Length: 81
Image (tube, rainbow, N blue to C red):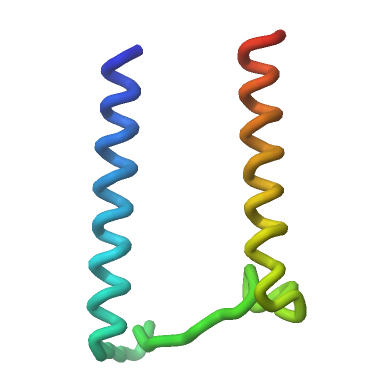
């Protein structure tokens, strides 16, 4: 069990680190284009292709509430069922 947790945390942290490095690279002005794909900077104010973007700053609170509810539900059913 401990090995699985350590492996998960290692993969999670490596993925998070790589993601942040790529974001920093793009914010510093890196651009790349080919026939297949283009890497450019784009800001999305909503979720999933700007859905719910009309909620502006309130969207983050709704997302946090959903995450807390999902985590609570998962923990409840893991430990009390």
